Image 1 (cartoon, rainbow, N blue to C red):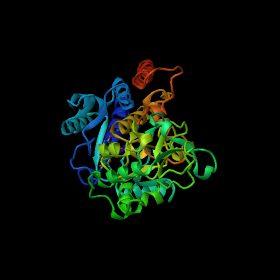
Image 2 (image 1 turned 30 degrees about the vertical axis):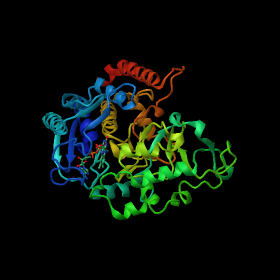
Image 3 (image 1 turned 120 degrees about the vertical axis):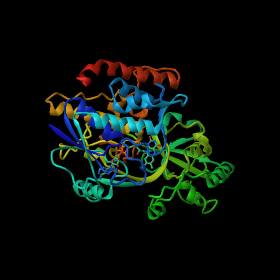
Image 4 (image 1 turned 90 degrees about the horizontal axis):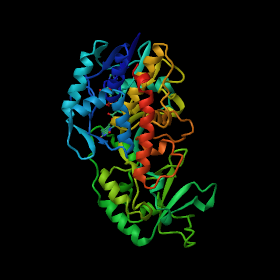
Length: 435
Ligand SMILES: Cc1cc2nc3c(=O)[nH]c(=O)nc-3n(C[C@H](O)[C@H](O)[C@H](O)COP(=O)(O)OP(=O)(O)OC[C@H]3O[C@@H](n4cnc5c(N)ncnc54)[C@H](O)[C@@H]3O)c2cc1C
């Protein structure tokens, strides 16, 4: 039994390790050192191409829960991160070179893993896991586009607006409604008066932007204009664009406000909203500072900040099942950021699930079917959820985990309970997962 894993990033390394640990022979194909993506600079596997932080390590935070689940289930990425951690308050940050070197050493020394360097340009025969990341090489991306259907199934994602949790929006300063009251009241409308808009506009137009990476295509950048770029075209340009108040009467005043930011539901449960038209290139702290000036968002919890870079990801709700397997060709699975999970830990978690479930299938065992109450399971179920119509990459968050069946006072307490519920499940299934 052999599985070919393409890409030795966060997802591919974890997946290869989990397969190998379960006695499956793995051919790991990585294009480094022959070729590198525009964001990768070293020859090591599992290279962190930007921040060295794997984010919060607290159980009141969903990514803290995801890490703890992986830790308890013997994840390679988590054990190497813990072994190379550097002080970072409540976060798990690592010595990036030490971390990647340790992952590389462990992978290369595993008796069941054979590393084959070189760019993969076609999909190999047999069982395959494609984990080539958001910056998948052009040749493989083209091959995937042919495989998955020319125009609808492989997205080149250039920009995304931030996501906020529904419960953090101040509904005393916003209202549900649609423009001219047409259809159902699906949007959350966040009004601003002239003074509030003016202050917001000033900060937006002068806020610090993130570094422009060399690989960003000027044409793409022009094609999906960031909100701050549009704002700089004139004081009221946004009021004729995404912040247009026409047809949106504030029920408390009976009048159209000066400007309205609309939030659109981002998941079927209505627990996550995106800021319509707010694709942005601002630095993350600047997004928090400036977007929190919108009165209804003064205390908003940002589940994901807006980002702008080339990103190859699949229309997973149409294509993949809960095991990240291609429904049309189950011998092919995907893992990592290209499945629409966003972030280092999320990518590792998808690789983990694919490794565990693929090994079980090849060994004739029933699947684990990680439940939605666990963060590992919730991610797989989110990306394969066919009711998600406009699919955008997603960080782990408590919005995609089912709520508790009782009320708990305070968000931190509630999140801590959600984590305890999940970890109790993980402890129950641990023996079976590791078998
Ligand atoms: C510029 C940038 C900055 C980011 N910053 C952060 C951040 O700060 N924090 C965060 O959590 N997430 C960040 N991300 C998201 C990040 O990419 C993912 O979190 C994570 O690295 C994805 O893991 P992966 O395993 O899917 O892909 P990767 O880690 O990118 O691994 C993919 C691997 O596949 C290899 N490969 C590609 N094509 C081929 C091919 N044809 N043949 C063989 N090998 C191939 C690549 O060389 C690479 O080693 C960033 C992404 C980008 C693009």
